[in-house]
Image (tube, rainbow, N blue to C red; front, side, top):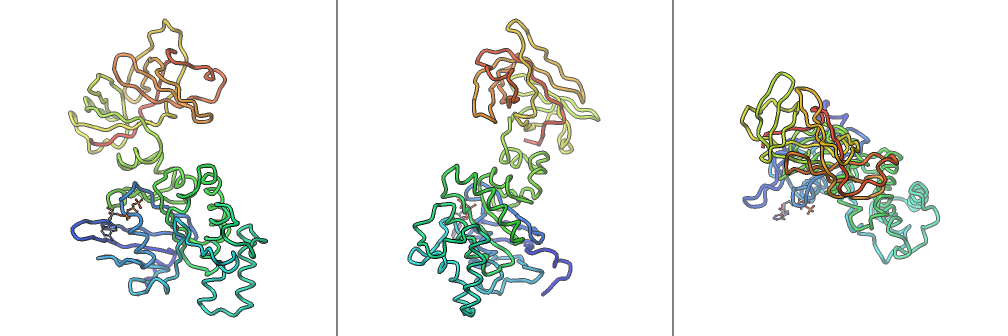
Length: 376
Ligand code: ATP
């Protein structure tokens, strides 16, 4: 039944679950995707992404819940009648057909008039930036060009929603980087809603308007890339999205502004926020981004300043253990004074840090509010 409230969403799932015997692969998942947006489902291998995507496509039927496209339930609509199309990881292009025949395939099956097919194919090849490739065979295309043709073959059918099942997984790293940007441009150009599944957080962060982080069949958090990165709701999201330092410790005191956590090795630091469920004496997990830590070089004889004050900065002296040079995202591992803990710190891109080496003494600091803290 059509529901007027949902019609501004291209796709909506309501309490969708899928079991395989006693195993629950998708567990009570609900979400809504606004028209024309890029929505990614991000999670580790086996978390249920493909099963969910296959239910959206109609290849699998949910055990409970409802799936609506443009406000109408599609549960009783077979895959070939749903206003969705799917790009598979291995693209599934027909090697025995030309590029133009591949793009025309769906329209031919729909028995569209010949002149309409020809003009739609010409238009689509131009829009994906391959206007002269119609006569080529698939094996004459590069990996990135095949990708674009696979998408063109779907978009020529004007689906409401395009489902993409890890389509960059088979490409080499450099091409994958390039295709992330291209895919986002294509999505914006066509204005079609994309639902993209991936286990690669950098793909999801770069391309998506919204991301759902999936774990063990459930959605842990749905938000913009920035919300997931800076305000993770759960420990899983904090650890899965982006790089983080992670410590486990005990909450030893708290006040109106925050709390102090002490790790087993004696490291003590102040944290804020997300503490509502934590009581004194309870175990906590604390996450801190490497780029949230300020680093200063200090002299070899300096002892470093270790201090923590409620609501203030955490300050620690330490020694560089390892330098992980990676150009723009270089990091150091620092052993903190007065504990056996070490911490990853992103290096600022200033000449002062270009020659930093093992054994360098440093002073580190971070604001209490930079930590994300969850019950362990
Ligand atoms: P990957 O990224 O590795 O493809 P995924 O997140 O897409 O993983 P799914 O393929 O959806 O995960 O699988 C989720 C779970 O459901 C897995 O444990 C898988 O073994 C199980 N599963 C999927 N399909 C079936 C099936 N037809 N029969 C039984 N179990 C299945």
